[in-house]
Image 1: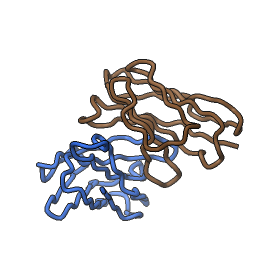
Image 2: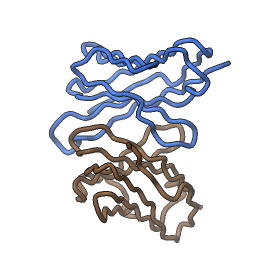
Image 3: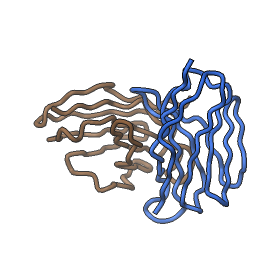
Image 4: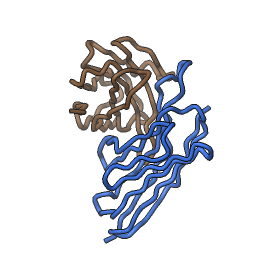
Length: 115
Length: 113
């Protein structure tokens, strides 16, 4: 079945870049997502990448996808204290079967930004 | 507008109570989801509705009963819950079940005493 793994913690200084990594197992994934969750809040969609892309940039966010290694990363440039949150990587199950459309989440990476 | 709303924000209930959680979206999405999330864990899928019909039930206990009265609304009826059911309940919607991104609501934080 599908499995998504992330490192649990990342600590950076304000102004530095943050890189959050994710690995997945389902080679037929079509979309991969990054969600942000602040304390006590729901999940906010940050960005997503289609599996035929290598990179996607959106303001301070850069997503890199290495499909051969099944590795996804999220880089946050000029990290701010407001970026402190849990970041979830998720893949969408491939077509067919009862899991069609189901998201598989990683365990989440807790990003702490120090002033 | 990519907003999914959920009410109430917080809910405390006893094990003999009956309560309902409500979710609403006005984006014209035809797929709606319920997730359960424990602290510092990823969301776990509970139910998926597609075109107002239940399409996925992830073996959820019958004390949780979903309902989709129309394409904009999704309810989760709760009865005889256990303390271990205390969690953040998240609703999400997407344009279709088979495609498109899921947008999440802010969640209802449930405490079962």
